[in-house]
Length: 592
Image (cartoon, rainbow, N blue to C red):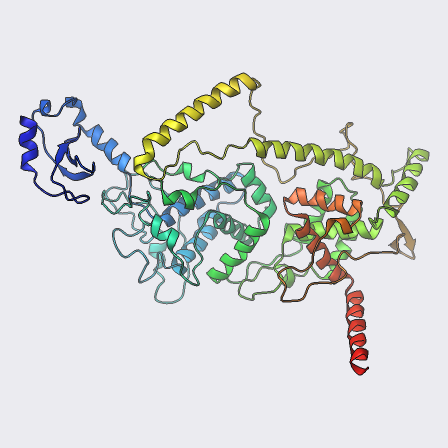
């Protein structure tokens, strides 16, 4: 009877279904018995016996905190990406990158993006209703900051010089960002945990680059490039794949109060590995959108210079150290080592933006073709000569034997590839933190996830009793070749004397022939530079391409294209003569 009296007092219509049929929750709040909508209105209950199955302990401070935790904060999508960028920057710092990358460079790029995309640091941000995003104001003087964990409190903010009325004073820009514990408003969308999840997924504004998970890696790489760190794009993507940098399940590190479901799932949940070509395009796209100035110069002492990268990859694939002089000559003749060519300048909008790691590998392939031709004939003949010399002169410095190198590398790359494929096949895409489409589905999803985890534990106990292998520390080298290793031949100290000859004071290759990887380049309006048909090329050339492609985790056609571009620069006269001959033929035809 007491319960009915309480319910009679509340005669407002339900905001969801307009019914007047109310019940009381365990926490003393009114809920609609028709649609189960819970209101913010509550009744102070003195006699707890009025509510069945309720204990006195239920109406206490701890329950209120739990209720707030279940409801979560009001947060925007850009705040989610800001949190992920912070995680990725921290991970790069643990890998040895300087703290300036996060505190200065990445922060400035992100701040510029928020301004350009009109999400913050501008007069009329896209979020005009409800609370502003935490990134909009750098005001740490909130009373609730101590009670709620600061999302990016260590993401310190140096001044960001931006001309025009939209920029903010340096004093404000230097204060740290934090997500403010917002009031529990009714703005949160029933279709997403974030306030703007639905709106964000539908937003298609011309000229605006929407943030996405792959673009977080573009931001990281741009920051690395600005700092001229010793991390290439292929290294970055490999570290992501090896889970040293959060990406696939990065949303799992969100604070518990940042509820993620519905449309948020399509924004933050990724079920594919990042692709080199895709991220490379997004790097240029983001840099152009941000209207970034010319990056710091890539000089000869910089890690990204082709001379240094060539030396690194020669060591990686177990090739002779003597090849370094030849790669340096190719770099010099082609002009790809010039500061103007190497330095990234988004404003200049150059037609050729350098893929530093791919370019260095392409130079090595060109040198291998200059030495051994790679036509499935000459390289084996030269190998037979080197093999005979090494047998007859065991005490001398051994000549480089291409056949033996091929056998050693094929075995090594096959083993590595098998492990990589197995790791990919075993990878669990489902996150430990279950995702659901709406708050209604939450109990069902959690129950299913619990069942899956239990089954996995039982199955792993039955099938694989071996202890988990401890994760190795990350390295920019995937292969390690040493003279002390008796199981595998190290070719670093081998001589190229068998394939070189002296002409005066300089050395020349014994091989005087060369075949071009691409005879004819596509026209300018075509999307690709050249086409790659595997069956048209020799087995040895295909092996070398596949070797380096796996090393960088790129397509062989992508690498073949870069080799063709290096050859175009190296044999400029040959290509020019071809075009002249074609033009003269066409003139003769016209005369007739």
